[in-house]
Length: 317
Ligand SMILES: [Zn+2]
Image (tube, rainbow, N blue to C red; front, side):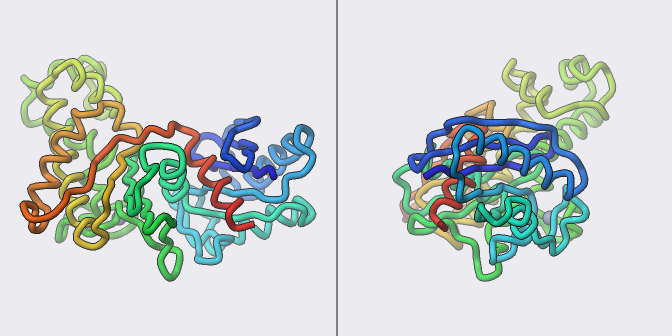
């Protein structure tokens, strides 16, 4: 049986036909439009292309950024697509396929976490938590080998754990959320504030951003850190510290055997993982008297979310 996995990203919509062993047979990529109707048309186009190659595709899994209701069909809210408020995404796509394809919608971080669990660093774990350190901080929780969605489909919004009382304002409207302190955005923030306070130490970073601190990007901080630049390493030390604190807070609730760290920022490897591991132990309750979860980088690659979405839909069918 074939399943179509769709990943609606900020810049592109990716689609892949997967077989029952999660093997990708064919794939497509198109730029993401901004209007829901246009997004639906893009998905239909990929579905029709997929049908030309594989005559029967009875299920489709869609990975989407935002909150998905417990019915796994409706987008309750998305920071990226303003009109996705109580939006019946699965209904719309099923109508477009003349109800020949059953659609399951899942939060993008959940799909990435599930992909990592079935294909990547999570294999063999029982209770796993994935943290995706991208622009923001995404989360996924697997308990006893199953994706944990919570009672209302809202579980694992780990980037919005309230870590700091009256802290920095978050895009979600609250203050002090974990992703304000550990994410790609936070990395840029710590590097910029470091340059402003210690310009003599910011020479390499200023060089990389052409002298304009406001244009400094996370990948420049990663590059400088890999060259050994002190200020870039300081910025990674800060987001690593907060990642460790966040994992310790999660461990107090979930007690997982494994944390998998994904997202663009993890390309620096131990530069992020070392301070994260150190501070995880530092803030873990009864640290000396318990077994510790492993903390590993993600290995399933950029298509993990799309394949994860297909696999979750296949299990539903
Ligand atoms: Zn928040």
